[in-house]
Picture 1 (cartoon, each protein chain N blue to C red):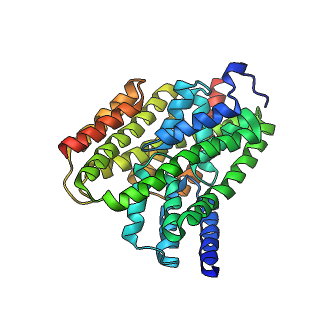
Picture 2 (cartoon, each protein chain N blue to C red):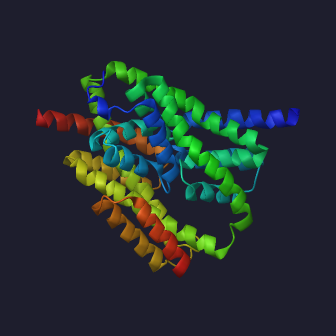
Picture 3 (cartoon, helix red, strand yellow):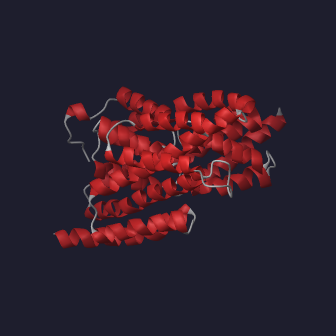
Length: 187
Length: 184
C-alpha cells in the first residue's frame, strides 16, 4: 500500500538507521518496550494501534520479534534499503557493546557492587516492561473479547509457563475470531 | 583450520535452524539453544550458558544477542559474527518476504482482521514477560532465596513511572542501578 502519511512523517533511510541504532543502544531490559517508546511517543511514526499490530505480526513470524518489527517497518517506509538500515542499526550498536561487556564481565562479573547494580537495574527493567504493557492496554481501549484473549496470553505465559509458539499459534485463531466479532459488532 | 571451519559450520547450521523455529521470539528457543550448545556439542557448561544469558539480558539490545556471545565463546570473533548472522538471516529474509507480500495485500479486510486479532496476544505476552522478569528480580540472591522488598518496590515504582508518565525509562533504570549499588 502506498504510504499516505505526510512526507515529514515518512523517515529517510538515514533516519531509520539512526533511530534503530538508538533503540538498540538504549534498549536495556527489553527492546520492544523501547521501540514502542521511540517510534510511537518520540518520533510519532506509528500510532499505538499500528505498533501493536506490527509487533503482533513480528511475534507470529519466526525469529527475534524486535528484528521482525524492524524489518517490516524499514520495508514499509523505505523498502529493502530501509529494512537493511533498521537491521544494521538494531544489531550494530549492541553487538559492539556486548563484546566489551563480555570481556569486562569475565573480569568483574563476580564483584558484589556489579551484581547489586545489575539486580537493581533488572528490577526496574521488569517494571518498565509491565508499565509499557499497561500503557498499551489502556491506550488501545480493547473490546471485551479482545481483553479475554490478552488475558489468556498473559496466563499462558506467566502462570502456565507454556512455550511461546504454543501460546502464539494456539491463541491466534481466538484473537482473529475476537477481532472479526468486534469489527462486525461495530459495523 | 578444518576444525575451526567445522565449528563455524556447526554454529551456522545450528543457529539457522533455531532461527526458523523461533515463533514468539528469541527467548522462546532458549531451551533449544541450551540443548544445542551444552548437550549436542558440549561447547560449554549449563552454568556458563546461564551466565552468558544473564549478561545478554543486562546489556542493551535484543536478547537474542546471547547467540553472539555463545559464538564468541566457541570460536572468537568469527564465531560471534557467524552465529549472529545465522540466527537473524533466515528469519529476517522470511520477515522481509512477508512484509513485501503484506504490502501487496494491504487493505484486504481479512488481513486487517488477522492483524487486529494478534494485538491482544502481543500485549498479553509483554505483560507475561514483565511478570516473569519481576519474579526473577524479586529474589536478587537467586531462585529460592528470600524476596527482597527493595527490588519489589523498585519494580512497582518503575511500573507506575512508565505507565503514568511520558518521561524516558532511562531515568527509572538509573534509579534502579543507584538503589542497587547503595542498598543491596
